Image (cartoon, rainbow over the protein chains, first blue to last red):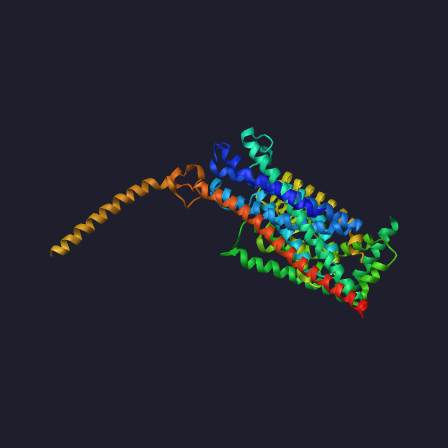
Amino acid sequence: MHRRLFPVLSGLSLCFFLVAPVLIVGAPYESTMGLVQKIFYFHFPAWMAMFLAIFILGISSGVYLFRRKPAADRLAVAAAELAVVFGLMGLITGPLWGIKAWGVWWQWDARLTMAVVLELILVAYLLLRQYGGAGSDRLAAGLGLFAMANVPFLYISTEIWRTVHPRTSVVPTLPVDFGVPLWWSLVGFIVLCLALLSLRCRLEEQRAMLDQLYLAVEEE
Amino acid sequence: MNRFLQVAWLVVWKDLRVEARSKEMLFTTLFFAISIVLVFSFGFVRAGQAVEGAAAGILWIAMAFSGTLALGRAFERERYHDALRGLLLAPVDRPAIYLGKLVGLLLLLSLVETVVAVLVAFLFGVPFFRHGWWLFLMLSLGTVGFASVGTLFSAMLVRTRSRTVLLPVLLYPVTIPVLIMGVSGTTALVQAEPDLAMARLWISLLFFFDTVFLTLALWTFEPVMTE
Amino acid sequence: MCEKRRFSVVGLGLVVLLLISGDILGAAQPTEAAQDGFVPMGEIPPEDQLPAAPLLVAAYAIVWALAIGYLWTIWRRLAEVEKELADVARRVEERESVPENG
């Protein structure tokens, strides 16, 4: 199933990504931020793709923990890696916007703090998978569940702490000219996320198959 | 329910008795916490004056660091002679074992934190005890949040090869909200004009964090610990 | 002698210049004092601002590079695993075929 899923999804996301710059160039300039505001058309979708990946990680970790389905575990690893990649995209494009709009690369703002902490949790998850040794899959599933449960707390605590980041509530109220390229590239990012997820899952499946084969060889 | 609490109490009692004989964890954790406060005092005191606003952070960092030290040792005794397997094979609710371990750790950490709070108040001249009960509530809730996640992770990592490295690596990112809430709440209490409304907000957030993560830990302890 | 006079003239000129510039600087100081705090971005004249286009291009390039780079790492790992898989499968087949022949 994954064999056919990946070419379809990746082709679709490539279409989205090739058309996106045209739409973004055609979009009007924002009045106070000007040209640099157009980073937003890739920045926001990258974060949304990361949240999608974290959500998939949490759900599949829970399923693995309570139902013991190996497929869920493979999905969790893939989702965690993707979340790190999309988080990195957001973390790099953000400061490129910030140096122009705020005059500094980094601020200890609510959203930025939260983004860094989430990235840290996900990297910790990957470290556990890498160096945990035998039996770390179940520990990782526990951590995945905790990572997802942590998102609202991190969100609230950093939000109260302090903020200068533009509010997410601006997104649904955007005028059509701004909105069309944004939604377009959001869909593009989500399709890309799913495409990479399917390919990454196939890697895990092949690894599992390899392990089984080795076990079979040893038993003989 | 009654039996659940009984089992939890038995685990606490066992740990307390072992600890009372050696006092190893209490003394090492306490010493470590005090040395952290001293290290921060050397780092943050300029020309005889403490840097303003550093005390709340030092208190909570000392809690987190010494808590990690204690958590790392929490299941150490069970590692020998397969004691953990024996504990897990006992015909009792597994979450009760978790709860017992957590309560034992909380008792230890509360002792350590009392000493640390007095020491920080003394060394940095902060009015921690102006709203003593509020600070007590905040520290207890924060410790419960930190230790509830930490006890689960520590239990998960017992059988792992690189557990001493992985515990802090996994624990700190997940418990950063506790540190943000605790430090902000404590700062609201000890600043020149205490902001009690703000402190109350942080305390309620800490309470929600504790509820969610304690429930999650009790819920996941069983499947995580099953071999 | 002539040299000396020229030096003194230049020196005098320098002193006058310093005094004038000191006056100007002194007068200008309150508006651009950077010691007490950062000047908000809005007050900086347009020619001092960073050009936005390179930042924008860099942001898009990084997004593309990360996506393609990650895709490449998956492909490489997949190729590695598939090669090993084929290898092991061949070995299993060989082993199974040996007893039948012999």
